[in-house]
Length: 55
Image (tube, rainbow, N blue to C red):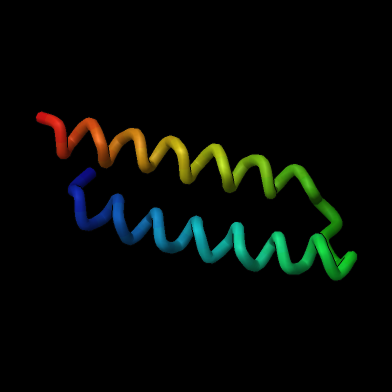
């Protein structure tokens, strides 16, 4: 993936994490495992961005 696409994906995943955190605190989130998935996806994208910047 291109760097711009990765950054766009990162922003989208951060937004999902924020919204899910908010829903979780309000007691409206049924699938709490999505919080962990979103955090892991963000970490994967950041790793990919860092490897592309390093090379």
